[in-house]
Length: 88
Image 1 (cartoon, rainbow, N blue to C red):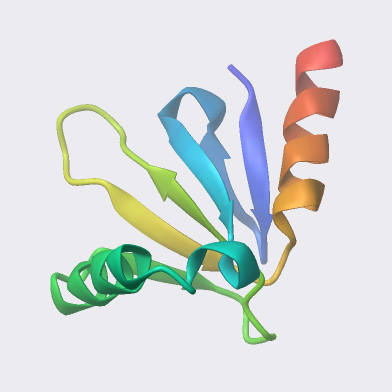
Image 2 (spheres, helix red, strand yellow):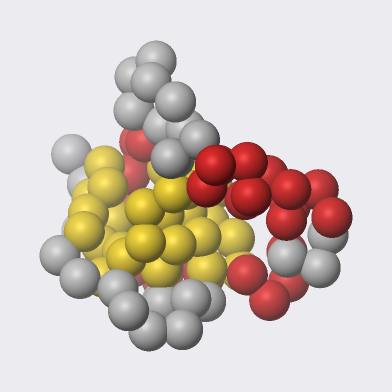
């Protein structure tokens, strides 16, 4: 099983990842902002690291609720990590 490293020793199984989203490009949308606010209110947001957030990863394992992982890594970095893992 491959894992996606989100930073700060946080890893997700790649098959649990629904999507990786760039915060600069997605938070201009009211719907995305509302989605993130609701996830925060429901306690489904996991902050990875203390630095400026650059992207968020939506994940779901099993039938549990979807989680939002806020990370300081860019969406491009996370994509590259996922692609490198799949090549091995």
